[in-house]
Amino acid sequence: GDYGCTFTYSAQGGTNEQWQMNVGVSEDNGLFSCSIWRPQGKSYLFFTQFKAEVKGAKIEYAMAYSQAAAGAQSDIPLKQEEFEVAETTVSHREGKFRFELSKLMIVAKTPRDEL
Image 1 (cartoon, one colour):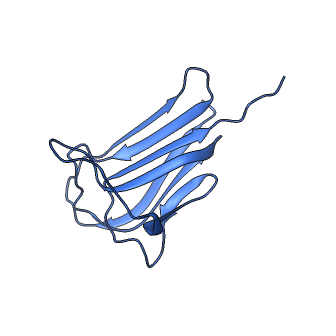
Image 2 (tube, one colour):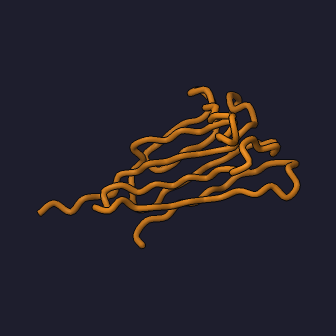
């Protein structure tokens, strides 16, 4: 509908890796979520950069992970200095990002029409 999520990146390696993207809107249309992840857990791609951008909403919460949960493994978050969260984007931080990404989660607030 009025909301969108775009994921752009550049990476090397990881032949035929399967990735998924889910987008959703809460029942009251107040929150929009966007998740990008590798269901098998760890990605073997060497990410040089990444950026996720939401359209039609402002980011409330975002987290990036070097490893996604799979089997007995749990999510391993990136260090806070490795990525930055702005009003509508989440992206790698040049010189700090350690080239590993397996999951990205964003929760954004949709604009409310005041009565």
